[in-house]
Image (cartoon, rainbow, N blue to C red; front, side, top):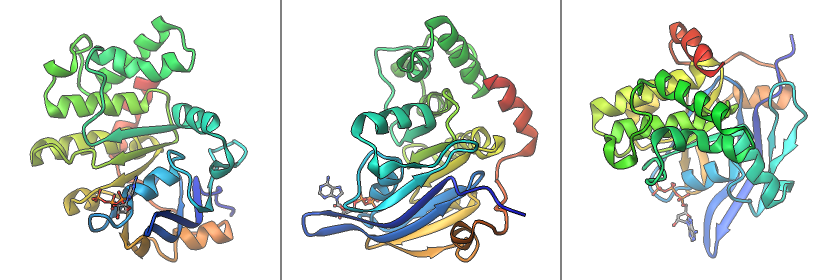
Length: 264
Ligand SMILES: Nc1ncnc2c1ncn2[C@@H]1O[C@H](COP(=O)(O)OP(=O)(O)OP(=O)(O)O)[C@@H](O)[C@H]1O
C-alpha cells in the first residue's frame, strides 16, 4: 500500500551566519499526523531549522518540499517572499513563546486576523474565531485584551490564532516556555489536541523533556546537525521510499469531534 507523500521533506539544508554554521546538512522528513519535538543545546540550530522548514528563512542551500494532502508539492525554497508569506498565512500556523498577540486587539480580533488578511469577510472571520476560542476553553473572553489574560490564556489565544485558517502544520517555538508547569501541561494538551488530535501536524522546539515526551517523535539537534531521531529508519526511510510504517498521532481521540465541530 502506498503511503501518502511526506508533508515536509527537507534535504541537505545549510545555513550560515558569517562563520556560524547554524544548519550543517540537515535532512528531515515529517509526515501528516506527527508531533515532532526538536530539542538540543542553546545555539544548536533548532529555531533556524524551524524557520527554514516554514519558509520564514531561506537556507543557503538545500530544499524543503511541502506537500499538503491532495495538493501539488511546493518547493518552499524557490518561492519569493510574497508567495512564502501567503503560504505561511494560509497553510501553516505558528505559536511562539510569548504568543505575539497584538495588545491593542481583543482576543477575538487577534484570532480573526489571519482570516481577515486572507480576505474572509469580518462577520465570518469573527464567528470562526469565537468558535476556536470556545474550543480552547476561552468562551466569554472574546473581548479581553492581552493585559486582561493570564499567560496560559494568552497562549491559548495564540493557539486559536494559529489554527483558525486550518493549517496542515503548526510550528511552535517554546510554546509553553514562559508558563509554570501545571499551566504548561494544560496548554500543551490543548496544542496537541487541536493539531494531531484532529489529524494535523505539530513541529515544536522545546527545551523541556516532559513536553517532548508527549510528542510522537523526538529529533535532537547539535551543532546544526540532527544527531538523533526517534523515527530514524521509519519516517526518513519512508520519505525516501514513499512507503513505511505509520506514525501514531498523540492527542486524545475523544477530542477529535470536539475540534472538528469547532472548526466547521
Ligand atoms: N540572525 C542571526 N545572526 C547571526 N547569528 C545567528 C542569527 N540567528 C541565529 N544565529 C546563530 O546561529 C546559531 C543557531 O541559532 P538558533 O537560534 O537556530 O539556535 P537554537 O538552537 O534555536 O538556540 P536557543 O535554544 O538558544 O534558542 C547560534 O549560534 C546563533 O547565535
